[in-house]
Image (cartoon, rainbow, N blue to C red; front, side):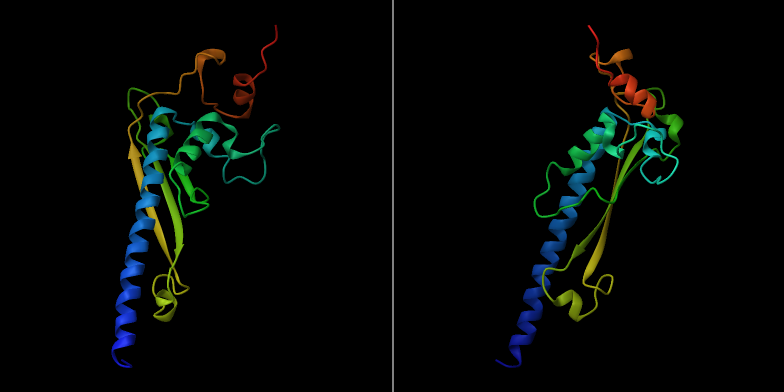
Amino acid sequence: MAFVLPVLLLVLFGIMEFGYILYAYSTVSQAARNAAEAAAQLPPYQSWLAYKDKTTGLPAGYTGFTQDACVRTIYVAAQSDQTLFEGITNNMTISYPNGEDTRNLVDRGPVEVTINYRVSGLTPLFNLFRLGNGDGTINLQVTQRRSIESLGKDPSKPNGAACAKDVADWQTINATPTH
């Protein structure tokens, strides 16, 4: 028993870790797929996406990256199927790999969503053998691309646009109607 138990536990923990990592990858992949589908319907402007990493020089009225309805819809879509993993959108990027000028219905994108997610091991196996990043975690990176299908039209908004180019445009789109 003393010789067989360590080997048996190693195999058992290995199966558990493999299944858990496979489940984590599937969940992150589904989140990226959902976000890419939403981005194909409501592609945000690159100028708005550029606000995400800025810390200075932000325009007046800017309260957060997901202030724009199109960006918020993409983030909500990515979070819709989460079960065990919190913060899956903390390291999500939305981009136009062929350049921001491809955000039109002639070129049709593509729009790309990438999620980088760090998963901790379920058992002590990752720490024991220094697997992954050496700290008991591995990085899962999933990228999904979709061709732009729509430019986010919203007839209830001024000029029929759902996506804002910048904060000033967001304020115009979301102005409170006066009667």
